[in-house]
Image 1: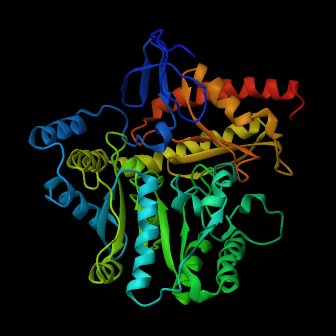
Image 2: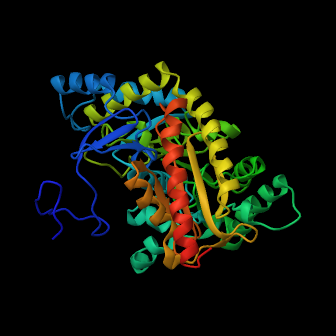
Image 3: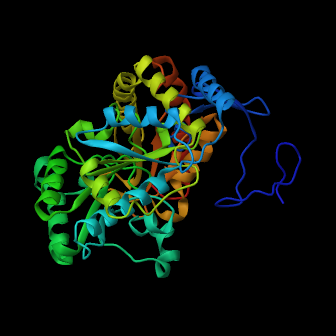
Length: 452
C-alpha cells in the first residue's frame, strides 16, 4: 500500500489509488500540507469553499451552537438555527420559493427535488407524469435517482441496468456550433429541443425538466444565450412541466448573485442548493419550493422522504454564519467584479496558448476548454489526459484547479478556475502565474507527443 506523509498505510479509498499530501491547515484562499508547502485553492475544493477557509466568525457560530446542542432529530425538536436559515433562504430565493427542506449535500438536494415533484403530481391527480428530462452532458449527483438524470457516460453507464433511464436533450453548447444563427437564435434553437422532446415523450407523461443555470463539472461553466432561459420557462409552463434548477454549484453567490436564476429573472418551480451554502464548514444542502407545491403534498399524506441529518443545528449554524459573511463582506459584488477580472485574464491566455479553445463562465465559476484545434474545436485525443495532466502540473506548483471531461465524459478536456469569493486582486496573480507556467509545460508535453 502507498504510504502517507506520516509513513502510515491508509485504509481509506475513494475513486482511485492516487494520493495527495496530508493537509495541515488552511486560511482564507490558501492551504498548507504537513511539509509546509502552500497551495492556493483556485477551485474552492470542488466549488464549495465560497468564503475561504477557517473564517473565525463561522467557527465561533458553530462553537456556540455546539455548546447548546449538537444534534436534535427533526421529529423530536425544532431548532432555531434551522428555522432562521430557512427564513433567510426564503427571503433570498426567487419569486414564491418559500418552503425549505434541508439535506446534507447536493445529491440529496436533487433527489429531494425529484421526489417532491413526483409526489406533487400524485397529490393533484396527475399520476401519469413520471419522466424527468435533463441535458447531455450534465451532472446532478451520484445517488441512483440523481444519476438517472445525469448526462455523463462514465458515471452513468455502469449502473444503467439498475435505473430507470430518463430522456435527455443536448446541452446548449453554442460555442461548438458553426452555423449562421445569431446567439439569440441559437439559444432558442436549443430551448426548442425541450419542446420537441416533451412532444416525443407525450406531454402528459413528463414530470419535470432539470437544468444547471450555469453548467458545472460536466460542461465546464457553460452559459447559454440569454434567450434560452425564458424560452425554457415558457415551454415548461405551456405543458405543465415543473422546472427544476440545480443550483448546487451556482448557488450561494458563486456566479455573482445569490442564486444564478437572478441573472435572467427566472423563477423555477423547485431549486436545489448545496456546496457553498455552508461553504465546506459543515455538510449542508437544501431544496427550496413554493407552498403551492408543498402544501398539496403535505395534505396528501405528507412528504414521503427524509434524511437523518436534515436541519442539523451545527450545519445550519454554519449556514447562517456563512450567509452573514457573504452579506457583511460584500462577497456577491466581489464575485462579480473579481470574476470579470479573472475571466479577462484567462481570455488573454488564449493569445499565448492556441490549445485553449474557449474561456467561459459567470462570476467566479469559470473554465478553460483545451482542444487540439481551435478552429474546429477538435478535442485533444483522450489518451493524453490533457486536463488531468494540467491539474497535476499546477498542483506541483502550488495551484489547485479542477478538471473534467467536456464532451459527455469520454472525450474533451476542461479545467475549472473557481477560487473563493473572497479572492482579492493581488491574489489573482497567485493563480495566474503558476497557471501560465503549468500551461507552458503542458503545451511542451503535448507537442512532443504530437497531440497538438
